[in-house]
Length: 177
Image 1 (tube, helix red, strand yellow):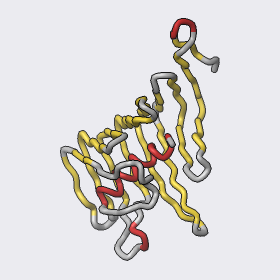
Image 2 (tube, helix red, strand yellow):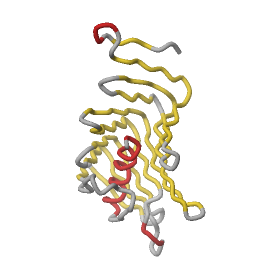
Image 3 (cartoon, helix red, strand yellow):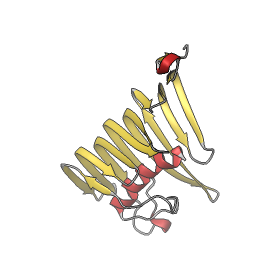
């Protein structure tokens, strides 16, 4: 479920801004989205929608903030009108409400990729550059952090380090590297 929420924030941002509809969003999760930024533009030659400076994308369970959000729009006539790529850059922060707790992922860059091969669709999210994932119960760092939706795998890159809260008297303790 956490992977779906991660994907949802990029999908909602990309889909809502693009006017596209996806069949991925679970019915139980609101598709309402709010977007604010100091500026933005549409680049017709590359079919990119770009928001910049103090970008904030929200829905009922998540909030994405960054300095630049680039959404690669499908060109006219593409079946399904599916956004294939969205990139959040600089001071990327993703807050997700999951089972009543807030999960916070921060990084330099976050990328959403949609692909379809032989009729099978997949969505991946990649966070890179000083990745930190923090929850009330644990936090970890790694480089990169990848969510692969088709396999429901969270792939932790190199230099993985985790701190778990709940040791002696609730004090944090660290797993060896």
